[in-house]
Image (cartoon, rainbow, N blue to C red; front, side, top):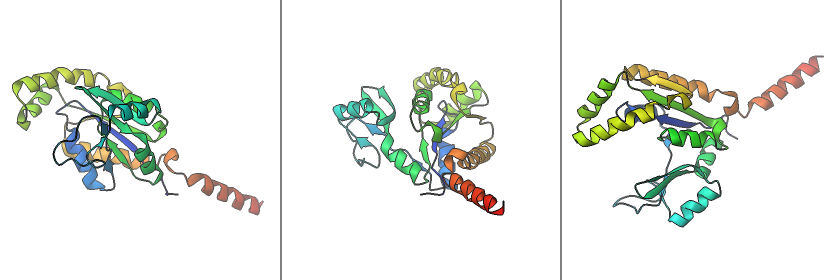
Amino acid sequence: MSKRRGLLIILSSPSGAGKSTLAKRLRAWDPSIRFSVSATTRKPRAGEVDGKDYYFLSEESFKRMVNEGEMLEHAHVFGNYYGSPKTPVQEAINSGEDVLFDVDWQGEVQIRNSDLAQHALSIFLLPPSIPELRRRLIERGTDSEETIGARMEKSWAEISHWGYYDFVLINDDLDRTEENLKSIVTATRLRRTQQPSLLAHVRALQAEFEELS
């Protein structure tokens, strides 16, 4: 058995709050942290590999997994189903590997209601201000004005659910937020539920104590 159980790390934010950058920095800090591979019913795109980019499933198989409780979270987006299969995450947790999830608040709630909830760590990233959020989206240079407007409209729906999360970080300084994020992960790895060897150690202490009596 691993010395510790892995974490199910949920990182959420509105677009432009720095989630992707911080996820990359977190994995650069500890390359053993891996992204969760989602399942989808959409067709593979050129170059995508089953089991690496996504688990590509038929709609029938996907719905069967949902009904059998084999999806930690799932959603229907633009005509296709997306979700997080439970078995690979359970195997990672048992072997002491942390799995990073990029899901919205609805996915966080579903994971919180799953039987892996005790291993979950959820972190929400807030922007320092709404004007700054818009500035960051514009500065990325990847979206049209219409898309930026749509992202801004959606941002409050995301922000309004900040209270569901274990930790909330205001990303007003990227380096400081990164350090706080790493501190949270480090501390949560030491949570009692993540240390399966503690019980045996306490029992050994008890036996030693009884020998002295």
